[in-house]
Every structure is written in C-alpha cells, then in structure tokens.
Image 1 (cartoon, rainbow, N blue to C red):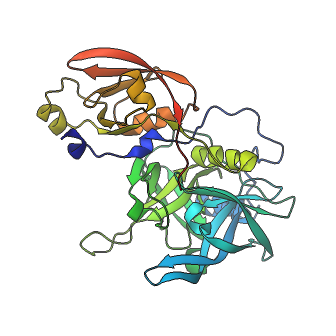
Image 2: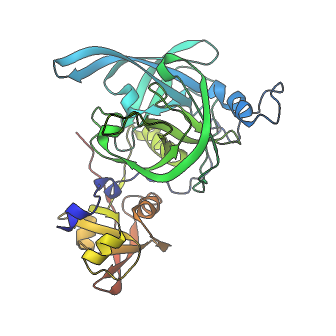
Image 3: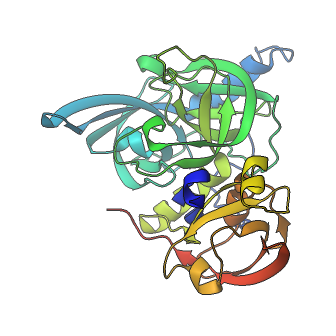
Length: 360
C-alpha cells in the first residue's frame, strides 16, 4: 500500500498558523538588545551571548511523571526565553508537562514563581507567566529565510549549568522528529519543520534560545539525538522549533489559553524517485498523499491517495517540508487552491481548511 511506502505523518494535517503578523504589542521586543561594550566586535559568539544572555532563563519544575510503577513525584530542569517584558516566557511543552510547581531562575540570579499559561503538544511550545515587569525580552525573528551554514548560538541550562553558551551552524532545515525523539511525555505526533544545528544541545537546553549573529532568536531548542538505534553516540545533531512557529503559538496561548491549527487531514511524504517509479508517477517532485482521512477537508475537496501536491496557495511544492511551510501561513477556515498531479494530469482543487482537533 502507498501509505506504507510514504513516510507518513499527520502533523501536516495540523500546523500552527503563522500569518504575517500585525504590529506587535509594545512589550514585545522590536529590536535585538545591544551587546556589552566590553565585548570585541570580532567575537560574534560573545557578542550574541552578551545580547541574548539576560533573556534566557532556567525553568525548574516539580510535578508528577508517569512511569512503569505508576505516577511518581519528579523534578526537572529546562530553559526558557523571555518573550514579553510583562512576564511571559516561551519554553517547551515537555519541560512543564505535568508540572505542579514552576520556578524561574533569571540570568541576574533572581528567581520567581511561574504559572503555566497554556501548552501545545503539537508544536511542543508552552508559555509560563511570572509576576514581573520590565523583563529583558528577546527579539524573535519572523524570517523564513534561514541559510544552511549560517552561525547559530544556543543558550540554555544543560544539566542545570545556567547561561551555558554553545555555537555552531544551522546544519539543516525542514527536519522531522518522531515522538520518541522529541521529548517524550504525551507528545504523540511528529515535530516538523524543525531547524537542525550542530551547536551542542544537551538535557536542560530544551526551551532555550537558538540565536543568529544579529542577536535575534531564530528557534526554541527542543531536542537532540543522543544515540543511534545501534546505541552509538551521535554528536552535533540538535533541533529547534522555528521562532515564527513559537511566537504564533505563544500569541494564541496568551490570548486564549490554547493554540488552533489548520487541518488538511492527509498522510503525506516526499515524492522520491523510487516511489515515482513504483507508482508510475510522471512528476519529479512534490508531496505525495499516502492516505486521506474520511470526512476531512482534503476528502471533501476531492483529494485522493497517490495525488502529488505540487502547488499550495500559489506556492510551488517540491517536498513535504514545502507543504508544511505553506500550510503554516493560513488559518482554519481559509480556502486554499491546491494543485496536484493525478494520473499524469494537473488538477486544481479548493480546500477549506479545518481546525485540528485538540488532543486528549
């Protein structure tokens, strides 16, 4: 069956909306902080660390963890990034999942109790609020144009070592991680459209910042590969959630306590030469549909298994990553023109996006 051939994920059926934002509120940083004057201009990593360091916090959590022996009290450490100066902090869902108590430690040595405003397991983003004002909010990038090979600086609290700085490059884009690789907990869906970096990321870095040389947060660190399936160690493969996804989800959580996601209702994957040959598909690239859920927006519009999506909302689709990125630009209820190759012919369908059902 085609669904067995395609690398299928339902996450393409539900993605965070990232429409072009209007003006940000005054308490959202509009520009990166200035580097300390003592830092030489020819030390880009030190410059970035000086700019973003005050905006990265350590998140200490006490809660209940489900184990083979049943619910157990547990403590954990993660990281977070100050999003708004009035106390809102972005972190990972898996950092605060099941938390009964959250304590936030700031770079200046002070601490404050935190309250979980809301979480989103589909993107692994959560928002924590502390009762403080005039916090050093970071500038979050809205760029969709990151470059493989550009400087990347990771800041967080690996193993509880607060304000640890590591550096490397962005080593890949549009990556995907299965639930077993992306923090565990109740994360039952793959994480998609991730930034890959070789800047060292370790336990405790989750929720911390991935920053470019301009001092803008380009991603929220979420996972790393500790070892291969054979048990061999893996070095230099870490992942971050794009900043435009993190801020879109955070804005929704702050406004309503939860995030909504546009929904197609398909399983999809990259069209490879092997799949194209096996199913006699004439096009060279696109996102191939493995299956269509009954009663979903895709089904109602007439999309079928083995259709190859080559265009979405006027944008060319060359692989499933392109489709995910394109889908993220829309909201539930939007009607989108989807171009597919079916039986050697190009066809266009209008799909009214639905809302991805909430988990749990």
